[in-house]
Length: 568
Image 1 (cartoon, rainbow, N blue to C red):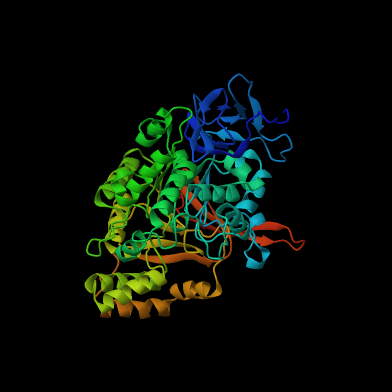
Image 2: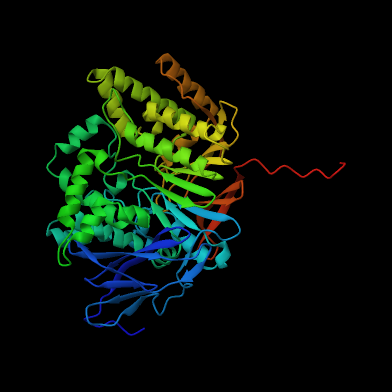
């Protein structure tokens, strides 16, 4: 590979292998200038946003169950393409596109909450080893048939409200002013710094180039407590800085994360993507994306951030549990009725298509530790009943201070999701999948819980929560979550809920494993109607090197009945 010259375009971030189905794939890159990007003979021109250049190459005509190594070439008008990936000195296996349809188990890795990358974080912060970094190193050393087939990142890929020392120093130069320790990003340009900081780690960069990734946002991509309540929105939208912040946050999310979530067919029907592609080559798409972002913030119905991934016998339905909330205290919803109807229709379609495993991704857990679930229900009930009065204001203050904003704090939506999952597990739409699995993050510990009532379920319904990939839970939070799972805390908070005349949840659940603390990555291993949940926690070996320790291997589906010998 020839060394790049002054007139040679360079690859800044990526490549990221994003949507992959049996016959097609998309590859996302950021470059340092306008150019043409080539992958496996398919090309795409870059588009500009805020002085940055990106491309999404659609690779079609692949074979189901195939493995295809790929390179990335960049060229400008009148020049030959220069290979920029893989790097000539790379110690990693070649990046490749592996389409669904191969024999053997389907492996899916998942997690959430990754605060920057280890090289940019102060050692004094005491954050344990980056689990995604250690996982990438582990995968690179495995035979290809043991690599994960998909990676699902369930929110907080960047932290716009918790900046590293390096980023604060960069902001000091950019802004020309002192930057406080609690500084936050302001606009699109500052968001681009966060993605570069997070995705340029060599191990993670290779992993993202080789394992197809599905992503969704949570609050820290925008701001802590994003869309907690109507009171929160009234306060933040009255400020002079909110429009620039949410425009930069949602526009950068669309470019860096959401665009790659879409299939080629969805890209062809996406009005924003088609509008960006229709711009003149020298035009900047930032004004267009800014308007899209502001419209989405003011009226969530203008953009659907939820999406579906098809993986043969498994299907992922990713649900936006942040941007699409209805926050009126008298009609709180995690997503509006139109969006929820779409979610239910996608669940029915999955069953009609005969999938063996239905995966529902949502950044926030549906089933929480029982005591915390009860507290969130009591808080919502008091805030609704006493809206605008002293008790209601106190409930609102507690809601924001303690982050009481999960599915349990949107009781109507909790029950509607329960009803949809139970209908799937009962086989009301067709033969029930072996499992219906809710994958979540956010709460800085890992656990597995299973619905145990009502009965009559043909398939099994689980909540699997894995968080964080690279962050930490302060000691008081660890204590709080341990207490939250305890029997005495459940009885105590349950009594409070009954005294407050709060309607109980429509399902009962039991903890199957956990809680586990530390930085961690979860894996699902799906084969036929069998499913297992593996959990890996980062640690240090005696020699000081980082590693992953497997701490859990939990069966999720009913075992295959043993064959009875004839006459036995």
